[in-house]
Structure formats: C-alpha cells, structure tokens
Image 1: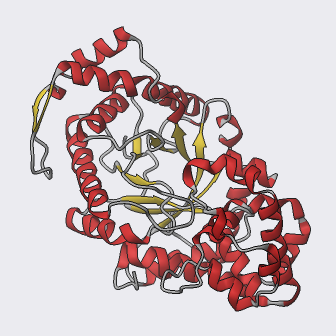
Image 2: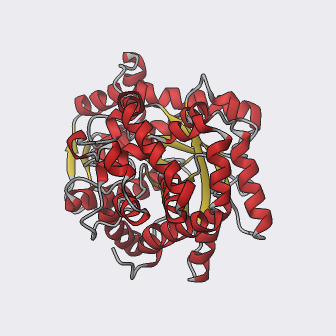
Length: 424
C-alpha cells in the first residue's frame, strides 16, 4: 500500500444491525471506549443473506452509519463492510461499502491446478525446510510434498479471492477500500505452515489484505460463549499473530495486516486471552459481531412491558413454530437443545423479568437459557415479516433499547477486549 491508500485502524470492531436502527447506540459504545483512552473504530457489517431476509439494500447500512456519525459529531474513521462477499453478489455492495470480506470458504479444498501449485512452491523455497518464526517457541520442518499438499488445498481459494479483489478494484480503484480474506469456514484450524502458505499466496495474488480471518479451534456459535479449549485457542491465536508478523516482513503484505475473529460476539471466555496477546505484542485486532444487537432490541422491548412484551413473546412463539427453516441456514454455527426450549404457553405466562433473564447473556444467572437465546438469534426473520409493526414498536421502546444496546456492546464486549477490568 502507498500512503494514499485507505488503511484500517489498529483496533476495529464489526457491528451488525439487522434492522439499521441502532447505529447511533453502537457508536455511543465506541465513544465510551474513546473516553477511556482506547480508539476502537466501528465497522458496520451486513451480509447478503441478512439483506435478503430483512428485505433491505446495502445502501441502508451506509445511510444509517452516516446518520449516526453526523448526529453524534463523530470525527474519527468508520467503515461499512460487505460481509461474506462472493463474486456473483459483490456488485450490489460496490457503491456503499469500503470494506470487503472476501468469502472463499466454498473454494477451500477444491484442488488447484497442479502446474499452479508447482509454480507456487518453486517461487517460495523459504517455505520448505526448517522454519523458525519469532514468537513461536518450537521450530518445525516442512517438506516440499507438505507445502504442495497445503497449496493444493488453499491455492484455488486464494485465486478466487484474487478474482473478487480485482473485480472490486476495477470498479472502485485500488487503495480505495479495505480487504479482508476469510478462511475460517473450513474443517480444522490452520497450522502455522498452512497460514504461511495462505499469506504467501495472498501476496502472490497482489491482494492488499489488511485482515485475515483464520479458523480457530472450538465452536463459535452465534450469540453465545465460546465452546472449546481456551488454552488451545490462546496458543493458536498467539501463533497466528507471530505468523502474520513474520509474513509481513517476508512478503509484500500491508504492514497493518491483523487477525480478524469472526462470530466474535459474546465469546467472553476468549476475550482475556485476546486482550493479553494484544497487549504483549502490540498487534491490532478486528473482532466481527453480528446479531446480538437485535437481541438487545428484544430485551429493551421486553423491559418496556405491555404490548411490547406481548410482541416479543409472539416472535418467540413463531420462531418455535418455524424452527427448522430458521435454523437451517445457520446449522454449522448454532447448537440448540430443543428439549430445553420453553413451551409457547410457558413463555406467554412470563413476566418481563423472566423473559429478560432467559435471554440476556448473563451466565451468572441460572435462568439464562442459551438455547432460547440462539433460537431468537436466528429468528429475526419473524420480526422482518412483521414489517412496520415491529419497527414501530422498536421506535416506541427506543429509550430502553438504546440503553441495552450501549451497555451490551461496551460493558460485555469493548471493555473486556480493549480496556480490561471487566466483569468477565
């Protein structure tokens, strides 16, 4: 990158907003972090699937973000992410986005041309043999056959990322947008050698990636805590930081290239290891969340009681009725024990406090129900079908909703990740 290129700031946080009503509240949370001396840049993200479900257009995300920035006199940068972009859908996001998450998961494992793999290995003799990476205690040996095997698995996907990047650049111009390469939707975490190959291939494709989203061990289910071995995650996270720093010095990659953690919302168990690694290395970080903002809308409406409480109960009932269809698109990122979902008549008898206690992500409360929370997380389609009925109620409950959105984003996410002394 040259000095005129758009650069992603050191700390950035991806925020989803299903119905484009909470941008101002989300920005307030970033301003609270700024008041504590930590600059966290908001990146509003919304995928093609989410737009399709809600019936919105990509431009609505930028419009909501720009309105929040104007109303709150935010003078720092902000970005709009075209989330999980593929070549066939990218054009819809060209005008409104300045951040592109290139999703090439479907191409991982598709065998690259054997000549391309051979040429790649010939260009990168440094990947074969004994590898010593500062920050990783043990060295490791790689054979040519191993690098060829890794190239065979990932090279086609990186070539696809290159095609998407060049298409965007041909329209918007190089240097006018931020590129992330997403490699997290694969069967197992990348080893240091695999990540080295991926980054070398990204450099060969001349993709100026500023973030890379690798696969980590464990489950990153939507809207609930991390499930897995935290110590193993910490090891992988620190190794990935070391590999990135090494690759930046050995390849022509942007100097601000940093790790991106996908589905990072509510992963409270790993926030401390992330913060410790960030503090120890000085590395930047991008954490992407989505969906939990909509759950705070439901909590704020439940708090408001009356017709609003009846509406959120109705949303749960309809989600329960349509559970198979709602869960199918998210099958790999949710784990719902249906035997632990409350019956509709049971929920209909709940008070505001009971509904909130079951939904709010407070693991200290025995009433918290992660199955209930996950179903409502994927149940936003029910509210979308309500149209103005839902949106008008949301507006009527704005004060309670705003308070919950700000508190959730700052207290449960930004504070433990970037500031410390949080409750988790």
